[in-house]
Each structure stands twice: as C-alpha cells, then as structure tokens.
Length: 474
Image (cartoon, rainbow, N blue to C red; front, side):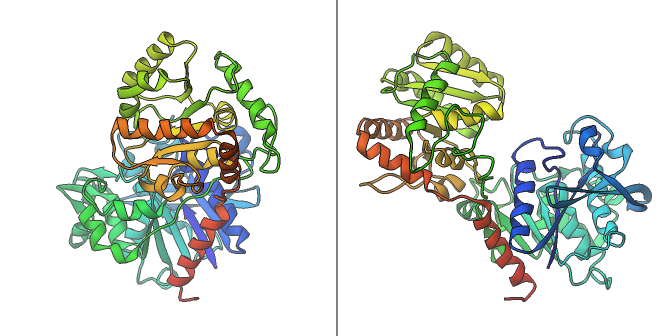
C-alpha cells in the first residue's frame, strides 16, 4: 500500500504550528506499520538553507491554473527515513510566510493541481491520497471531477482530514472560472453561502473524512461547533470518522528529555519534585513544594477558555496556589495577565511567546495543567502533560473529552467540567487542589498519568484500518 500525505507544512522543513508537527509524526508512525508513506508540501522560500541542501531535483512540468499554464518544479528529500516531495513555483511560494497572502486561493489551487500532475513523474503510484485542511482540499475535488476517469488515477482513494474547521478556505466566486479550471456544472460542489468553500468541496468529494478526535467528529455536526458546515457534515456523516491524534513520545519523554532538570519515570517519580523547584525558580516564584503549581501552555485567545480564567483569576489566586502561563495571543489577554502577574508577583508569572523547551519545563514541573477550552479539535498539551505526570484540568469538549477522564473514587487521570462557566472551572480546580494535599492519592494519580499511552502508533493503526477498508483489503 502506498500513501501520499499532502499538507501545507511539515517538520523538519517548515511549520507554523501543530499541523507541521503532526505531519512528521504521522508519516513515521504509518511507516512503522510497514506501509509506504511519503509526504508532499510546497517549496517555501522560508525553508532554511540547511534543509534545502538535502533536496534533489526530479523534474519540471506545466500545471493548469484556470486558463494558464504555470511552471512547477518537483524536488525530493530523504530525511529521518521519510521521503518528502516539494512543489516549486517562485511566483507562489518565494515570499515570506506560509499563509495569509492575498492570493492564497490561487496558491493552493496550484499546489493541489500540481500534486496530482506530479504523480506521473515520481514513480510512486499512491493507493491513498491523504489530504489535510483547506490548503489541500482541492485535491479530492480535482481527483473526482477532472482525473477520476483517467486510468492512472481512477483507483486512487482520497482521505481528507479536518484539523481546524474554523479555516475553511472561503473565497469569492470569481476564483471559480478564473483559477480553479472546473466546468460550470461543477460549481454546486464548491459553492456555499454565496462563496467558494474549499473544505466543503473536500467533504463532498473525498472517499473518507476524518477529524483528529472522536468527540469532535460528533460535535461538528451540531450548529454550535460546525462553523456553518454542520448540515454538510451531517449529510456526509456516513464517511466521517474521528481518530484522536497522538503525540511524539520520543520528543515528550520525562525519562530522556534533556530540557528538564531531572529525568524521572513511573517507577521513580522523585525527579518531578526537583523539576517543580526548577520551574518555580525559572518564573521567580517562591520555592515551596507544598504549594500546588498550575501551568498553562496555550494560545492567549478566548477560544482556549481565557475568558473563564479572567473571570475568576483572583478567586483562584486567593487560595494557596501558584500559576505559570506560557503563550502568546490577542492584546487583551496578554495585557490582562501581565497586569495580574504584576499585582500578584509571588502567585502568578507569565512569559509571552512560545518556547518549546520552557513548555516541557512546565509539563515536567507543574502539578496541574489548566486547559478550559471552549472547543478543542484534539489538543496536544493535555496529552503532553499526562506524559510528564502533570494532572490536566479541562473542559469536556472534543479531544479533551477523549483523553482526560475525570477523577472519581480513585479512577480517572485528571479533572473535568462540562458547563462552559467560570465557576464550573473553579470547582474543578478546587477538587484538584483538595486531592493534591492527599499525598498518597496524588502520587497514585501521577503514576496513572505517566502510564497513559497516547503514542502515534495507536492512531496510525486506526488510519491503517480506514485505508484497508477503502481499498477493500480487510
């Protein structure tokens, strides 16, 4: 079985966020299932020279973009056992930044068409084209509407994964005749609410659609989570599956992580206390082992529940608690929490920005991780926290609901609340705080967290079964 994974970004070449991290981990885990899996991304100018030097030229071709023919260079690199392909066009990709350009619709229409055209030149006929988010949403559309009857394409199955339903690839209807190159009778596939919606087209045309957590697959069919696409998703519910993402357990490993002060494991958790001391010193908080430390590693936006935290932050801090916060986001939240840290210097500390080594220090040194998201497609920080024996406090939504089970009578691996309400969150914090002072039960909970298994191999096995089902190999 050959799988080609098409995505807008991928480590170690370039990543704007979690999507790029997922790509590398996913392809490695699929290969460990003895499945051929290669990856294709645009050849951005922001890819560093050290990584560009690993690429070799394969071919150059012409790719239709509406009524035009555009140059496309094809390059290849072998890194960490994975073969990467790169789609080159300086007009579209020789500019700073991955996304956010005025012509993103045209840029990624070109990329999607180029991926399909490339297949004739790389000696790698895929059985599965696995596409991700709106940047590759036109691949299943083109495969079905333009390439479906061609001999070398007709047996290819397409999988489309929704990582972020908020960004659907919506553009004015003028892109349809000028850029997409489709027939007029194909317009209903992509038209939605008076515009062209690329994600809607992928949902309609892909052979299978996945989301990155089981609960989120159900939630997005409801109006409050569907971001306008809930009806389309309900109409296609028979081909939608939720498969929870994993985390890179080699990167997040308290036994080997060289960014933390002292390594530790489920068999010996004594090193966790040393990492707590180091964290308190790093954030200039009083060093006190008996005070619970709550960490937050998050984007500072209200979608992540920051409005709940703002509403009760002083009630949280009136207790014997310390908080450390790492993240960046909108000005309102940055200013608010910097002000709180200034007013409560021995209780609250914040660092604006995202620094992976500091994030891992928080996962290792904090006692609890607070993640009260309004919605959460999957979420990685709660799984990383559990990997380090730090107890998550979350709202029951999306991937948080799938990975964190509320503590009750000695079971569960964290604390959860259902209602999106600041005092429901505060109650969950108080329950965690109360258990913290029961040293014996808290240590049991830490060990239970450390034993949780969120490795990518579990997720890869589910994708493998989906692929086999599409190819009638079961």
